[in-house]
Amino acid sequence: MSTTAAPAALRKTALNATHRRLGAKMVDFGGWDMPVEYSGLIAEHMAVRTGVGVFDVSHMGDIQLRGPNSLAAVQHISMNDASKLKEGQAHYSALLYPNGTFVDDVIVHKFSDNDYLLVINAGTREKDVNWVRQNVGRMQGVHVSDYSDLYTQLAIQGPRAVDVLRKLTDRDLDGIRNYWFTWGTVCGLHNTLIARTGYTGEDGFEIYVPSDVPTSERVWNEVLEAGKEFGILPSGLGARNTLRLESSMALYGHEISDEINVFEAGLDRYAKLDKGDFIGRDALEAVRAGGGPKRKLAGLEMTERGIARDGYAVLSPDGKKIGAVASGSPSPFLKKNIALAHLPIEFIAPATEIAVEIRSQPVKAVVVPTPFYKRPKKQA
Amino acid sequence: MDYPAAYKYTKEHEWIELNGKWGKVGITDYAQNSLGDIVFVDLPKVGSSVEKGKVFGSVESVKAVSDLYSPVSGKVTAVNDDLTASPEKINTDAHGAWIMKVEVSDSADANDLLSKDAYETYIKEETH
Image 1 (cartoon, rainbow over the protein chains, first blue to last red):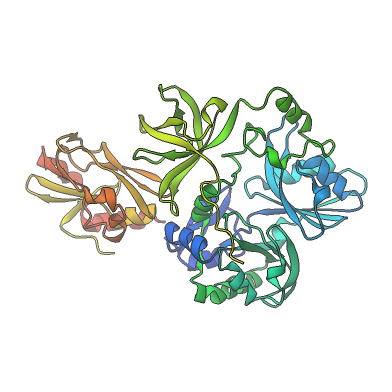
Image 2 (cartoon, each protein chain N blue to C red):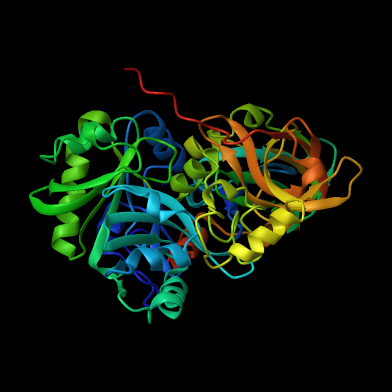
């Protein structure tokens, strides 16, 4: 099963053959042939929570905006306030449609006053690139480049990630704070982008190396070798999903989409309505002026036996459908069955009892605060 | 993986060990492997009727739900309650971790089930 070639229509990262050699189960993820698990989802999930795991996330896209007006461009197309970023700092943001719903969520990295990198999702790559080009591509003093295919992006995640990367770089990693980045030599590659970012709720790094196959394979193997003493596991999209769900991080098409606005997704703390005009701002102002959203993302925990899955109906205590599960799964770390769902605001207070319809049966659940999991604070 | 020659198999990846009119049903190693870490088993009720080719329960891994299809028609005489607390036993021993025992109503039900060899050929084709 692991030795068959990827279907021709699917796109592959430079590490495709490596994943297959490792015996990964491969799936079609947004048109990409990606590993869903290697040794097992739960083992990989636990490795990241308690030790370290490495993910190939090269399917993510990278858009660079350069030129004297690049800040103005970033400010126009994304909702967070990029003027607050220092060189070497990144933040969570989103590209919005004029109606305040999501084109995508992004991480904005400030390289310099004239140079910003947006890291975008795989499934929305073309749409995002077109959206950026369409909206700021003709602005004076801005040059938009799609560098998605130039990088192999590896996410080294977990409390021991720093110990793994320390063995492979000359940079002082302790000086890189969460959501900051730098450049350094990694595996002998000069000027490698090293960002203390991730999508797992753990400490960790994302490194960006050239996407040719020999370099990508060499770096991947060196990371695994360096991580051996810390029990590193190559980890797939299955664990990536359960890790991000425990940490209540949004996934496009689930918690955020072109039918869900920023307030409904509970991401309004990242929308800086006072920073000046940006696409989607007027719609968000209108939502705020109208007393806020009618529904909002809430965390659920099953109190009866049953697993809420994506798309299952959420029911009020009297059996009326009040929403649908955006993402639902067993939580490998918490050993509970958890879910996120957009619910009418009268149901989102923690301890509210509701139910999820599982195979035509209502199964009890309760609203709980999110994130479900928060990593322990580092001891000094 | 060794598929016991004494078992019969379905194309939905259940196995049944038949002993006269008594049958013991589980899922195959191929099925547990494609599902991944199994975290939940929805067992049928003892005394309920099951129908050949119809859903009698489900197993869930972290990432997916998979219905269980009965290889035969009959009455459920026992279920493996161990699997409620330890569903991962299906991962570690798929061909030992039975899910239900059935009193088979028509022994002819088993005639069109796959032999070990036929099942092994079938899963080889399915992976290509």
